[in-house]
Length: 77
Image 1 (cartoon, rainbow, N blue to C red):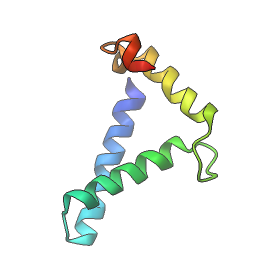
Image 2: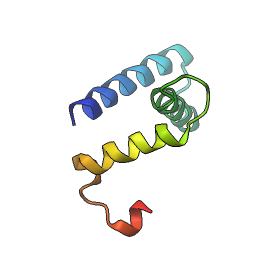
Image 3: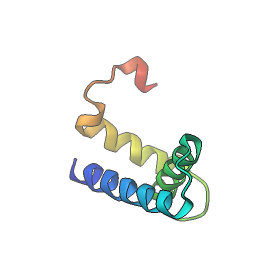
Image 4: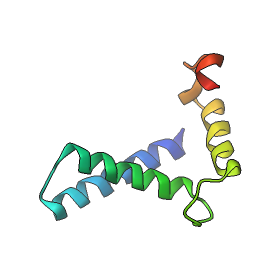
């Protein structure tokens, strides 16, 4: 859970920093920055693609943490 909290803090800091640089706090732009930051974090090997193993690592992490505790089997598939 500490990794998730740290990631969340980093992403929020990056998002606010980019917003100040852009001076255009559009909702679409904010979402795009967040998605780009998450993608870059999840793309462990930096090849520009999310491989099955990278997605599996995220899935395992979610299953093992509190993030996955409220999910049912059908929502995980």
